[in-house]
Image 1: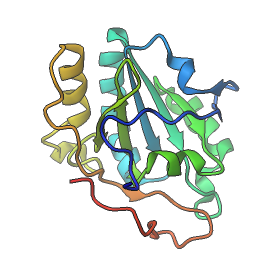
Image 2 (image 1 turned 45 degrees about the vertical axis):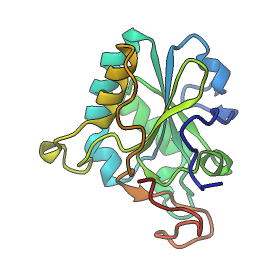
Image 3 (image 1 turned 90 degrees about the vertical axis):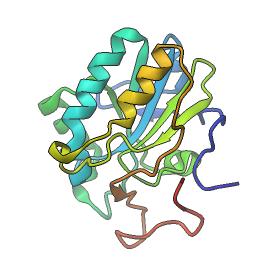
Image 4 (image 1 turned 60 degrees about the vertical axis):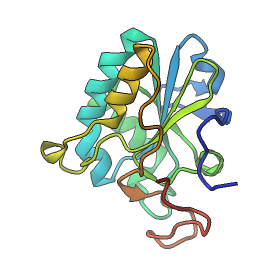
Length: 193
């Protein structure tokens, strides 16, 4: 089995606290036609650089039955800025249109095989994985981006078309694993394409 979820895999469940004071599971989004689960954080320049494009994509597709949940799995021992308190502050400041939850144990990042921030996973109505990878081809400097894979994939899905490119390599900072060097990756982590 590969480190990262493979296309067709069911969405691993979780029970994580959100910045809004609620707890969230996969079932919390049962009314959504599609679910975007993405691994993100507070400090990564690739996240910060692309947040507004992600916001625009979310605002475009939420009315079409797509739900979005951002998961911060980074260790606060590596980056103190990634603490839950800072997550709450960040959401209060930016008012992103997605749910933002904390994966303190990093169990959810391991279950999904999250490689980087940001790393997107899109699930269909049956909560089977139909896309994994990057949102943009240049998330750090969106002025130079030429491809929005998140928008393309969601556009295909809501139009009833097959996903033309189901996997891309996520682009960003690696997940900050507790007790490891900031650039460490699990031994079985590898490129998706």
